Amino acid sequence: MDGASQTAGGTAREAVADIITMMGSKFSRWILLAGVLAVVACDRDKDSHDKLPSTPAPTSASADTSRPALTLPPDNGPSPAFDGDRAMQYVKDIVKFGPRPVGSANHKKVEEYIASHLRGDQVEDDTFTADTPEGKFPVHNIIAKYPGTKDGIIVVASHYDTNYPLRKTSYVGANDGASSSALLLELANQLRGKPRDGYSVWLVWDDAEEAMKPDGSGGLPQEMPFNEDSLYGITHVAEKWQADGTLKRIKAFLLADMIGDADLNIDRDTNSTPWLEDVIGEAARRLGYQSHFFERTNEVGDDHVPFVKRGVPAADLIDFMYGYNNVFWHTPQDTADKLSPKSLQIVGSVILETIRILDKMNPIPPK
Image (cartoon, rainbow, N blue to C red; front, side):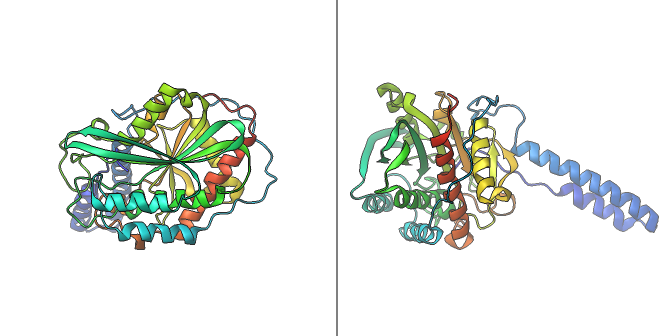
């Protein structure tokens, strides 16, 4: 995942702490302590605004902020099945291949690994050559299709490549790419061979999501903005489906990204379609997982943006606070030991419950 910046604060605390040390009066210390809390609060607010701009950032998809009235089906079905332990094993398998930047031998091994788990399924290989600032690269989107009885498609997507500028490090993207790719493999297990009394579900492992030039993440100075050098694979899918008419059939696009963190807290994303995020929140509430959703609001440039721009209802399920101040994101410290099978199970179950709600909603808002 990429496309949003993180900043650090703390200097205000240190400055006022020095002043307190110089004061001799207990009363004065209490007065100054109150001032510290106020300054720190302002400092945190400033950091928050730096991370979550109130005006659209360059990556903004200009999502429709209106909320149409929703007709939700009753909550009367069994909880969906999702094996978090099996999904976690898929994560471990993927990271064992090592860094998997686009065009690498390890990347090819992960392509083959994903394909090996989809044998017997209806799979489309969407391949093309991306022209990037680092040259031309082969891109391979993998699309598994599970037919339903209703006319329409629900797409669930995840990227599986790792950050190209970090290709010479030990960065394996356990949370960023592997966790969501593993989640889709387990979703395939739950969809495979079961008749769907609802919309068709298409799972998309999209490629070349990460920036090719340093974008300011991973401790590297920015050479090119993320929104000008990223999302190659999923943009190709969106353009292709727009050209052949598939786009009109998509009822919802659900993106999973960075969803394995043991300290799980999925952000509400202002680039996502509000009513669709409300449905996700309802699905979480029905399963008793609402405490893991939408405590924070963020604005994320991610794989859903090409679909939002084309009028498709889309939502990004992402926990963009991976370690304190997102310290593990795009670093070699993004390893499997920081993830939890329970987090995978929570997000996987909520996605399946969201699909079930969408299957029974009448009508589904157009965007």
